[in-house]
Length: 393
Length: 246
Image 1 (cartoon, rainbow over the protein chains, first blue to last red):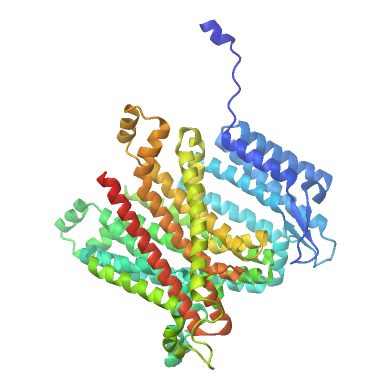
Image 2 (spheres, each protein chain N blue to C red):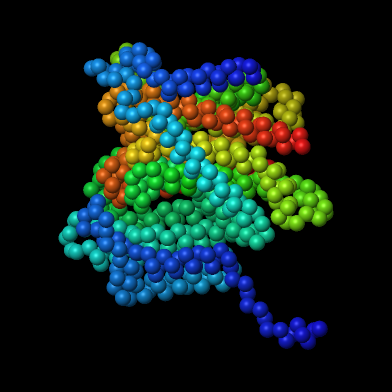
């Protein structure tokens, strides 16, 4: 028996199924899909170019070599750190390649020709991103490390953008035209999302505490807030526009404060209303989780009910409340987009303008920062909630 | 309390149907909101047709996402798909940070204007809640129950169909409800990319500065979303009750 075991040829390690899927999809994208699209102006359909036609030979070969290494790592390496490193190298190679393609294909001084990333680029980026995400998930990084990782990615992306690496790509061309407006709309976007969140925290925390103390109120109040959440954003904006317009017409002070039927006011009010449910419901859930013994002990020590609430109950409920705030912030960042339809400003302005002009580059100029903002907010608040939850135990 | 809810529900349904079937009889209510003799009731299309088209798009997309999401959820919770499980959870988390509008906006240039981008965006975005709830539902089946099923000689397939899926059904239904409600909202925005739906009324109001259109579009869409949510919650309770009685 032992002889037979010794004689068997060591079986080839089974291929990683996820890696095989990603490597296969990436290979198909690299070979058959256009890496970039060359358009003679910003709205016409473009002329697809593969990796080899878009780059100088050394660049294309270098990029392919890195991609092949990443594919090998995806297929045969099980160490998560190596896989992450390979995936990130791949991302860097693809990003540099698309930037180089932009530089190579744009005639000097020509401001009309657009070089847009093609389907091949996006699929490759997605495969590499999935590989990196999978590796990070397997490494189970702690909250601090996750935030550090996010900060590093932001710094690298920021440096590349500041250096002008991507300046010849179509999205950055749109940015160059809209730079002033972009800063203003981005500020408006963040301001609307954070302002309505802050107002909602101030109102929803007391509502949640009240619902916890008076169980009779709970189903009625939370049920009403739930109904509000169900109304689609644009419908709620529309419903609010009429009373706000009437208010502005009747009360000159309201109009002077910038309250109008159209613009940011209905958007801010609607976002505030949407934000109430997750925070109030999570406050109730968090307070319910506070161990009765802790409250009894505090009462035994002679603490007043206000001291117990602020010193014990709310502190212990904080991680759950923070989870509610995370839900609201991510939801708000996404929903502010729709505010652009009613003149509320924000990055959605570019999205809807882009849809109107069938200019995908303009859509991306709005959509990419929105997704990046929402994603960063989710990572940071998740990490914060986890740190607090650990401290609590 | 339940009596009150039933009355409210019936009133909302009656209001919605009344408005969709006989919109002109509500004209006096909306006239004060119009200026310079603009029409008080949406006149660029039949409201009922728009509402049905809206519901149709939402339901088609939800049916497709249910099939795919439940299938994928089953796949990643089987031993053969276990390797995909951690990644798929992370992906669901990341996916939910994408605003539905962004998904819609990015689809347009790829497939053109009309129903198609709306359907695709609704389908893609609707996958997330159903997939997430399917995974949670299948993973939280009590291990004793699963062991008992295997002990009775059930094959993996039988166990899935007659034990695991029925136990996960309430959560899966909740996922479908969430995704339908999100879809009703996203489909409204679909009108900006020329899909037929109730968003058209609101957009027409915004373009012609007619508050009456904006308000009625908002009210009809809001009522529809609330009634749909409520009806599905009722259906869920009903199915769960019969499942527990058996």
